[in-house]
Amino acid sequence: MAITPSAVSPITRAYLFPVTSSLQNFTNNLTLSHADKTVLISSSNARRPVSAAASSSIGTAKSSIGISEETGTLLERVEVFDLNGNSMMISDLWKDRKAVVAFARHFGCVLCRTRADKLAAKKDRMDASGVALVLIGPGSVDQARAFSEQTSFKGEVYADPSYASYKALSFVSGVTTTFTPGAALKIIEAYMEGYRQDWEISFEKDTRTKGGWQQGGIMVAGPGISNISYIHKDKEAGDDPDIEEILKACCS
Image (cartoon, rainbow, N blue to C red; front, side, top):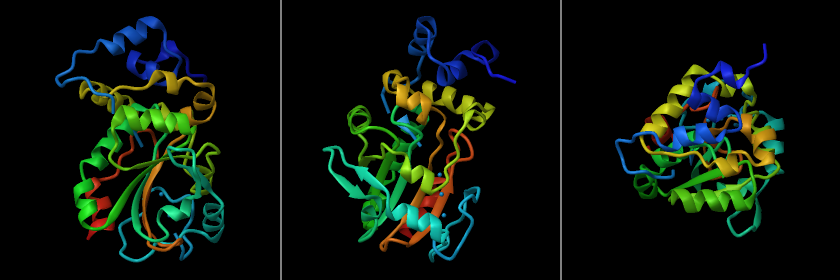
């Protein structure tokens, strides 16, 4: 059965469908308990073969958890871009170091902004362990730059315009993974905490037709191209893993 705007709550409708001016006014004028801030957010597998379609968290094993050979091959071909538009292979982000790599749903996503903020709050602990914090989003360099400026994210930000990393890691996508009661609650919570969706990015054509339904994930990788020690694949929008699991995998 088709999902229509009239069938969902106002805030969920704002998240899933193009906004009307009245709905924008509603979300923009929510009473907040904190000062307004613009902050977005964004879960994964490795080399002793494990199904690339594994669900949510795969665990925090201290050794590599294994991804399929096909997934590894696809990842090695993925190209991402930094905020200056310079290209690099995605594996270069963890080849010579350990990194926590968060994959955002898209650069305008309010849930991705809350996740980025939660990860950034633990950056001192990552720094003390020599671990880099990286966020990758499916979109353009301009969108990545806007995200970085709006959120003041403390980690590194890269764009994956081709969505190749998301395809390689088999992150889920679709209406049924975006339109869920859990996601709606997370959106309400994010707005009440003062986070905001970037509607301009959210409703750019490419975001709507691709990233609008795309889910992300988090992984801990490196040093070494195929050394992936933790991976979480979001089952739905806002499917955040326990931050302590991530820290155990990267910093213990």
